[in-house]
Picture 1: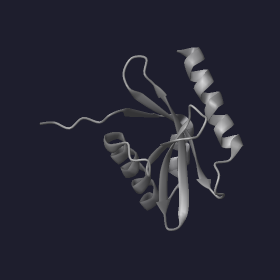
Picture 2: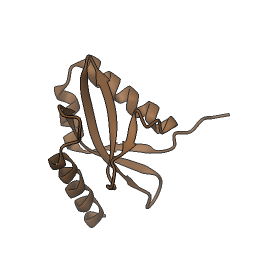
Picture 3: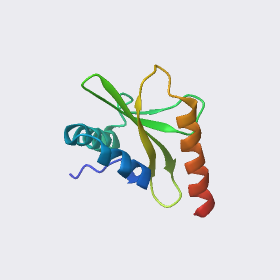
Picture 4: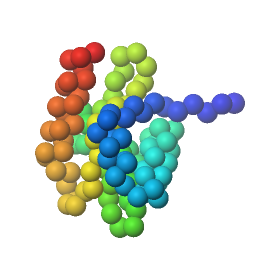
Length: 112
């Protein structure tokens, strides 16, 4: 029996640039957590932001909180589009990061 992921992740250029800037060990853990989340939908790794259509991939490495915001595209198959990443420095996800993800989401669906 083959276990299939619940969704496929597509990375924007912003995410690729964010990951390139990180240390290899951090990047490896983030990508591992994204893959793990795609099979398990574990809220410790992938969680919907309250009151939003935006989700966040969550990774903690060496005491630092790394986040990649994303949204679902159910139109052709189950795809999650990761919009961008950042290092979280406060308890609450900054509104400017949520706004940025929402803008990318809007552009994505307008161009589709």
